[in-house]
Image (cartoon, rainbow, N blue to C red; front, side, top):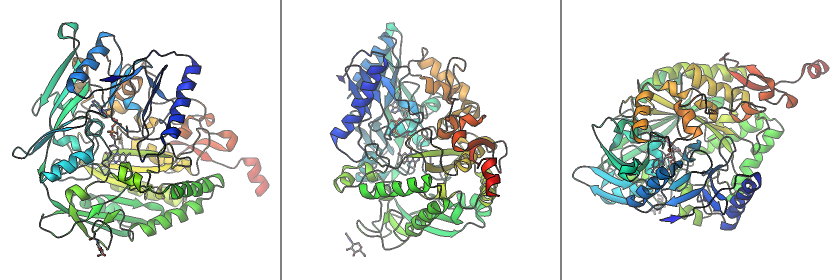
Length: 602
Ligand SMILES: Cc1cc2nc3c(=O)[nH]c(=O)nc-3n(C[C@H](O)[C@H](O)[C@H](O)COP(=O)(O)OP(=O)(O)OC[C@H]3O[C@@H](n4cnc5c(N)ncnc54)[C@H](O)[C@@H]3O)c2cc1C
Ligand SMILES: *[C@@H]1O[C@H](CO)[C@@H](O)[C@H](O)[C@H]1NC(C)=O
C-alpha cells in the first residue's frame, strides 16, 4: 500500500503553500482530459479536490494522508489504523465527480482512502445474472466487460466516468419507472464493507450484507459514512438494444402530458427549454437484440479548448453587460443545433444520419465522453476541467419531486417566465434548460430518493462566476426556482449535486433517516467516517455542526444561504434581498435600480 503520511502544520502559510502546489502541479502535469489529480500532497499534508475547480463553499479540504489500497486486506489495515489512532477517514474515487463535499474526511487531519487502484471486476456469473466488482471500478469498464459476456446493466447514469461505489453512495440514476426504476442501487444484491471494530477484533471488520439483510438498505446509499465499501454485487440482464428518438415540440401542453409520458417509455426523459417554449421528449425504448443498428452515444464528448473558452467569453460578456438578449440568442443557437447534430448520438461509429438511433445497451445507455484518454488524444476536454483558464463554471440544482407535482411546478415556472420574458435563458443555454428524469418508488434504500412515490429528478445548471462576490444576471429567478423546488414542492436534493443551501434541513425529508443513523451507530459508533458536512446532511449534532449554510456577506450569491438581509446579496451593486415573484416565500437577490436613479430616468 502506498502511503504518504505526514504531519500537518495548521498555520496559514502552510495552507497557502498547499494551495499553491495544488495549482502549480496542474499546470505542470499538462492537461489530461478529465484527469486532474484530486489529491495533492506535500510535506505539510494533502489537499483533496474534486473534478471541478473548487467545492461549493470554495474552501479546500485537507487530510493528513492518503492511502491507495490495492486489496481488501489493505483497506482493513487503513481502517484499523484510523480506528486505533482515532483518526477521521473517508473513501473517494479517482476523479471525485460529486459536487458535495462528501469525500472530505472530517477535520483537517484525517485519512483519504482513494479507490483508484482498487478497481477490478472480480467475477461475472452469467447463470445467476450478477457481477461483483471492487468499489473503485469505473462504470464504463464494468459496462464493457459485461457486454463481452453478453450482459448489461439495465439502468445507469448518463455519464460513465464514475466509480461504482461513488455513484451508488449518492443515489445516482438514469431515467425510468419500469422495473425497479432507474436508480442503480436498486439492483445491488450484496455488498461488503470494511467498518471500525474494537481492539479485541484488531480495530476493523469486514461485513457482508446480502439481499434481505435490513442493513443493506443503509449500505445501498450511504454517503460514504458507514465505512469503506469494498465489493459490490449487482444484478445484470442479457444484453439488449435500445432505440433512441428525440422529438422537439412546443411546450403548451407539457403540464398535461408529463405524468402519462413518464410511464410510456422505458428510458424516457423530458428536457424543457422554457424561455424558448420548447420541449424535447426522449422516446427511448428497448428493442430486440436482432434489430439492425450499431448506434453509439457520444454525449459529454468534450470540446476543443478554443471553443470552451469562446463559449465562456460570450457568457462573461453577456453577464458584465447584463444583456439578457445575448444569453437568449446563445440558447437559441444551441437549441437549433441540438437535434440536427444528433444530440451526441451516432448511427454508426462515425456518422449521425437521423433518429431513431438503434444500438447496444452498452453503447447507447451512457457515455464516458471527455473523461476518456481517447477524447484527450483528440484534443477534446470536459468544459469544467479546472486546469482550463476560461473554463465553464456553473452551479447545479437537482432535486427529486413527486411526478404528480410536476404539472403544478411546470405551471409555476411558466408564470415566472411570464413575469420576466427571457430571464430563464440563463438556464436554457446550459445543456438545454430543465431535465426531468424519473425514479421509481422504493423502500430498498433508507436514503433513496423515492421513499413514498414515483419521483422526477428536476435538474438545471446555470452560470457561476470565478469569484464569490459578483452577482449574476437574473440570479433572482434561478434562486426562486431552487427554493420553489426545495420548499414548495419538498424537493429532495441529489446527494452528489447542488449548492449548500439545498441541504438545509434535508434530514427531515427522509422518513427512514432514524433507521439509517441506527445502522451508522452500529458500524461507526465513534463517527470516524463522519465530517462536518455529512453531519449537516444527516442532521447529526445540530448544535455543534456548522450546518450546510454559511450566513454572511454575499452568502446568497453562492447558494451558501437564503438571503434575509441585503448584505447577503450585494447592495453596493444594486442587488437586494427580495421576495420571489411567483413563490412569494422565496428570498432572492434581485437587481433593482436605486430609487434616485429611477427618478432621474423618469
Ligand atoms: C458529467 C456528469 C454527469 C453525471 N450524470 C449523472 C446522472 O446521469 N445521474 C446521476 O444521478 N448523477 C450523475 N452525475 C453525478 C454523479 O453520479 C455523482 O456525483 C457520483 O456520486 C459521482 O461518483 P464518483 O465515483 O465520482 O464518486 P465520489 O465523488 O468520489 O464519491 C461520492 C460519494 O461516494 C462515497 N464513496 C466513494 N467510494 C466509496 C467507497 N469505496 N466506500 C464508501 N464510500 C465511497 C464518497 O465518500 C462520497 O460520499 C453526473 C456527474 C457528472 C460529472
Ligand atoms: C457510417 O454511415 C455513413 C453514412 O451512412 C457512411 O458513409 C459511413 O461509411 C459509415 N461508417 C462506418 C464506419 O460504417
